[in-house]
Image 1 (cartoon, one colour):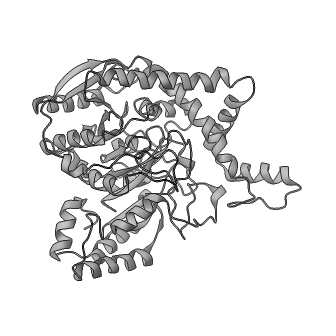
Image 2: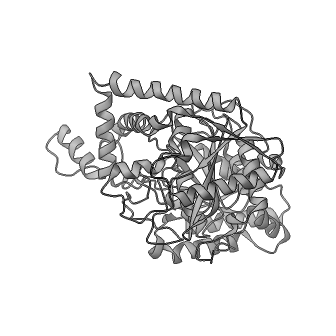
Image 3: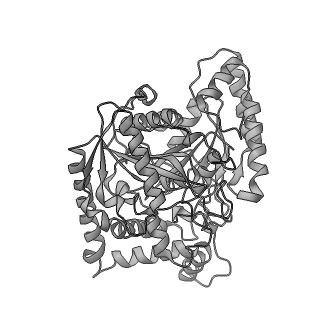
Length: 488
C-alpha cells in the first residue's frame, strides 16, 4: 500500500493476484497525501474523484482479463509544470492563477495509455527556478527525513512524495539538476534522460535547450519501467529524438562485469564539498569495483565554468520563454490598470516571485545589445567545450560516477539570503544538462542521518547502462530501502 514504499514489481504482483485493488492503492495514496499535507506541504492538487474513477476502470480491466501494462492501475504524481487537460497548472506561480490546461502533455498521454493513474500535482520552485522548493506560491515543501530541511528543488515535491510513501513513482523536470538533486536529498532514485529522449510537449518551459522530463522512484528498476513508458519520439516536439526506446528492464542484468567507470578528478576536489558525502560516494564506487567494474581517472577540465555558463544560458532562455506571461492571454491580470504598459508591468510584478524576477532580469541583460557576445555567446562556447570534455572522457570509460550534490539537505532558509550559495548546490549536475547527456542519482548512504546521492552520467541515449549499473548497485546494498524516520 502507499506509505510502505513498495516496488512497482511488488505492487504489480499483488494487483495481478487480486491481493490488492487499484482503488485500495489510490485510496491509501490520497489518505497519506492528505495526512502529510500540513507537515510537509508536498501536494498542490489531488484528483480525488477522477483518480478513484480511473482506479475503478483499472480494476475492471483486470477483472475482465484485458492485457495490461506494467504501470496499469498504479498512482503517480506530476510536477506542477506538466500539463494535464482540464487540470490547473500553476508552476507554483501567482501569475498562472486560474489557468487550466486545454490539452494533455505527451507524457500524460503516454501515462494514460499505460493505464497509470495521475493522483495529482506536486509542489516545485516557481517556474522550476530554484534548488530548495522554497520559492512557491503554495508554500515551502519539507523533507520527510527532517521537516526543518529542504527536499531540494526545483522538483522537490515529486521527489519527497515518493520518499514519503505517498506514491511509488513521480515525474519531475530537470534543467540543471532539478530531478537529481532532490532525489539525492530525499533518498530516492531520480533520472534525467538524454535531452530529446522524452518529449517536452506540454512541459511549461524554463530553459528550452536544457529542460528534460524524467522519473522518480524508489529503485532503478522502477525508474526503468517508468522511463520506458514515457520515452520515445514525438513529432510535436522539434527537439525530440527519433531513436528507438530500449526495453530498459531487460537491461537490468545485475552485472557490471567488464564496465569501466570514470572518476572525474574535478568532482572530488570541489571547494566546499562535504567530506562525508565524498566518502559515501567513494564507498559506493568501491562496491561497484567489488562487483567487477573497473575504474579510471578522467578529467572534465571545464567543469569550473559550468555554473557560470548554465546561469547565463538558462536565464537568457527564461527571459524569452516567460515573456508570454503578460497578463493578456491567460493567468493573472492586474486590475485597475491605466494602459497596456501598466498592464504588463503590474501583472508581471505582482505575478512573479523574487527568484523568477532575478533570473528574468539577468537573462534580459545578457541578451541585450552590447552584452550578447560577452555573455550569452561566450556561455554557449563554454557549453561546447563541456560537451567535448564528456566526449573525450567517454572514449576511455563506459560511464562516469560523481557525487550528486556537494552536501546533504540543508536547512530551510539557510541559503535564502545568498542566491549564489544556492546556485552552487547544482555544481555537480548542471554540466550534464549543458552537454545533453543522461544522468541518474541513487542513494548511497546516510551522512549525519540524511541521504547522500551517487550520480552516474552516461553517453547520449545510453540510459540503459546507467540503469543497469544503478540496479546492480542496489542489488548489493540496501540504501534505497531505507525510509525517512527509520534508524540508520
